[in-house]
Amino acid sequence: MALENIEHKFADNDGVKIHYVTAGDGPLIVFVHGFPDFWYSWRHQMEGLKDDYRVVALDTRGYNKSDKPEKQEDYDMSLLVGDVAAVIRAENQESAIIVGHDWGGLISWQFAMTHPEMISKLIIVNLPHPKGLSRELANNEEQQANSQYARNFQKPNSHEQLDAKRLARIVAKDEETETRYLEALGRSSLNGMMNYYRQNYPKAPYREQTEGIPNVTVPVLQFHGLNDTALHHHGLNETWEWIDKDYTLVTIPGVGHWAHHEAADLVTDTMKWWLAMRP
Image (cartoon, rainbow, N blue to C red; front, side):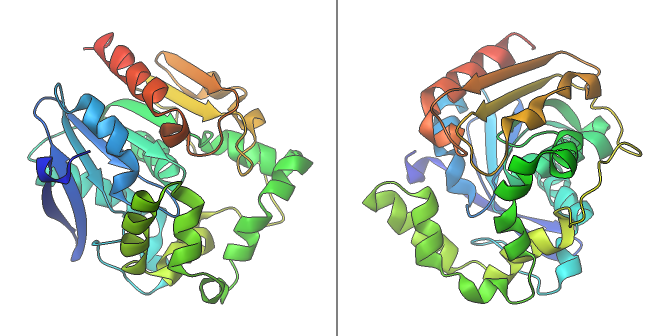
């Protein structure tokens, strides 16, 4: 996406500044990235949708140009959800279409559950519903093994084992993209990234969450790259039981955790079709 086509802005959530970029005009779409990432993760989808929508992608707190609180509790899920709400309000809108990947996916699921009046449609990339994830962590040995990285990240000194260059190479597959990621992640807080896991990721011994999680009340489109080695696709089972509106699931063989990068055209074109069918 041509950087001259976007505008950089900031929203305020109780004194924490959240950086975001905007392009296009029309109904508001807010994109929320995961780990280790920043707003640029959504470049393909923003380019594909900006002619018909007001596309917004934020840096979640701790990342790139957003503020980087130091305390673990400053990364509580309620605050991460509040950051998305702050961006919607900063755009002078009452609601938006929300799109999330990885941690951004969990934030987006939670946003739909806790702020149903501020969301019209939900799109998720490679993050099972919280009930599905908790069920697999409690019962699926493969998911338990796959989540070893998260248990490592929950350790107090985990940020000391990371560096921006190693993280950039997880996401970037060419030199130009790696340069962008290296710059953005170099500005980010490694400790803040780990606080997402320390504060919000389920801790062993795992227990299945069945109570206190309301159903999602808006239409949902979900993508899942079946080669995801962090989040087992069995977590998708029964998702339709937790959504009161229509649910569209697109599984993508041969694609991993970053489906919106690895199958960018498929993801973008499907988003455009699905959104057009639900004006």
